[in-house]
Amino acid sequence: MSYITSKPGERFALWKLCERCTDMSPKKVIKANLGVCPKCQLHVQLTSDERIEFFMDPGTWHPLNELITPQNPLDFFDSIPFEARIEDHQFLSGLDDAVQTGIGFINGMPVALGIMDFNFLGGSMGSVVGEKITRLIEHATREGLCLVIFCASGGARMQEGSLSLMQMAKISGALYVFQNVAKLLYIAICTSPTTGGVTASFAMLGDVIFAEPEATIAFAGRRVVSETLNEEFPANFQTSEYSFEYGQLDAVVSRLDLKEAICDMIYFFNQTIYKTPYISDLLDDLIYPYQSFDPFSPEADLYGVENFPFIISATDYKGNCVFDEDMYDLDLNEPVYSNNKKLQ
Ligand SMILES: [Zn+2]
Image (cartoon, rainbow, N blue to C red; front, top):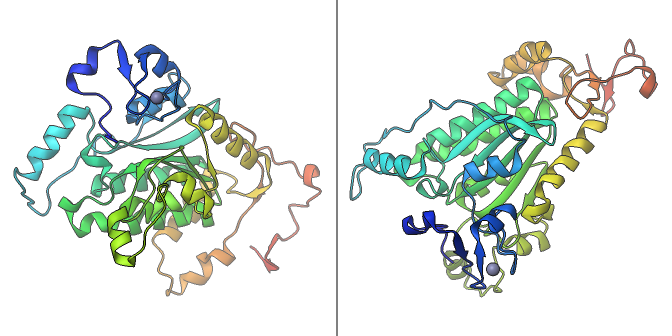
């Protein structure tokens, strides 16, 4: 199955041929159906702009860190210089790199959103993708926002060598603070294809992991795995359904229900009593020393996860704190305990 959704000549066509069932549908109908074939339910690959249009409330999208652009730190040269390859892809896709990050609303709920775009160099994760996603996570941590990332990638960007591999650790580190220190919700959504370094890092670190039907989700390619293990695999190997069967995913969700599923998760999270930072001032004081902290330093005890001072709060669907002492029959003057350990 080709991942190229439209050839240059097709750009102005009014009808589109389904690659699987060969059904001809008006482009308007496919668009209204969020890029899902009305006949056979094939989920056509979407661009990041289409995902913003389909999933965000109109007029609420605010991009972040748009000025970060890729370089060629290793002077990589294949058939053409890497700079020229980047320029070609920037011209063809209208993007600076393979991810768009920003904030906006989904059904009135504020979220920090990252959307990878497979049309830019196969959605490969280079320094820019890693940096933009890390900054998005840090922004969401500061603002107390839920995080949603649509993953679509061929893996780490080989033209940037080990610099691209380092992004896996960098993003995972930022996610650790987001999930385990700020105690916020991260929803990862695997779209086709989610492979390589992205699968090996943030795509599989979601508190909730969704995938679109029949999406390719893998680390190494099928042939490599098959030859290494000298084993044959079923036809649906490395699909979202296969991964779900083996417990790698929480749910396989049709794109038509995806927005509602995301909203349900965020609403559920916001309605529950969670340990979330009370106000962003506290985050500035508390998260930031933590981010640059050395686990072996004397300050480690002070800012370590177990001793981290939290305030128990609940937020409404817009993320506003609605904590009410009487509501949970708690006295704020009493020390707060977590895992039988007294918190500050
Ligand atoms: Zn079809």
